[in-house]
Length: 356
Image (cartoon, rainbow, N blue to C red):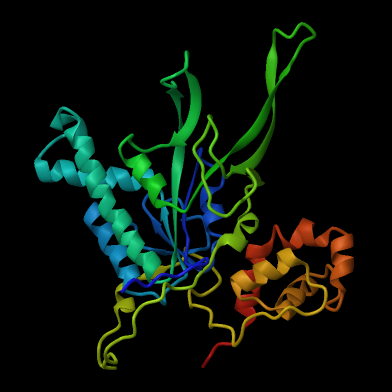
C-alpha cells in the first residue's frame, strides 16, 4: 500500500562550498553545529576544531565515513576538507589496483569513468551519514575554465569545482546546496581615456544561485549573494534524523559501542576539551520581542535567550536585561550577534553544566 505524505521534511543538509584557496571555506564550515573534520589535506591544524586522523588512503577514508554513519552521537556535522584532495586519494587507489602510473594510462577515458564510479561510493557512504541524522559538508577548491555554449559564438571564463569533469557533476547533483565563495571585485578605469583599468573591492561573498560565471544552487530561496558568514544560512540547517522504523529488539548493554572506533582529536595546544556538549533540557521558547532572525538561530542551535544575553553581557557590551528593541535600534543585532553567532553558541555550550 502506498504511504503518501505531504509537506516539508526537516532533515540534515548536504552542503558543498567551493572557492579559491585562503578565502575561508574551512572557517565557514567550522560554523556548522558541532562539527568534526575529516581533513584530507591538513588545512585545519591551525584551528581549534575536532578532527579525526588524516586518512592516508581512499580505503581508510571510506572506512572513517562508515564509522561516522554507525556513530550518530559523536557530532552533528561531518566535514570533508577537501573534495579535490579526496579525489586524489581515489585516483591513487584506482591506479594502484590496476598497476597504472596515471589515470590517463587507461586510455579512451576509461580511467575517468572508473574514477566517477569509485567516488560515488564516498557519496553513498555520506548519504548514510545524513540518514543517521548528521549534516554533511564538503569543501573544494575552485578553478577557472573556458566555457562555450553550444548555441552561442565565443567562449567565456567561469568558476567551477577543482574536480574532474566526470566527478564534479555527480557531487553537484548529490548536494542540497552548492555555494560558491569568491571575492567581489570591480574593474574601473584608471585614466581619463579609459585605456587603463584596475580592480577594486575584494569583499568576500557567497553565491547561492546558478550564474553563467559560476555553479551554485540552493533549495531554500536564499538571496543570490550573501556575506561569507555561516549565520547567513544557519536557518537552513537542520539536525533532525530521518524517521526510521522501530527497532525489533533492544540492543544488549554488553555490546561494545562503535563510537569508540572513532578517535577524534583537537589541535595541539587547544584550551577546550573535545567533550560533546550535553543536550539542553528543552527547546527555546519565544519570549518578549526577540527578533525573528535571532530566534531562528536559537532554534537551529538549541540555544536559549538567557544564554545569549549572558554572553554579550559578559563581554561588557550591554546589560543582561537590555530590551531587544534597543539592541536592534543601535545595530547590535546585525552588527555583532548575527556575525558572531558561531562564537556565541560555543561560549554558551561551554558554560552549560556537565550531566554528571
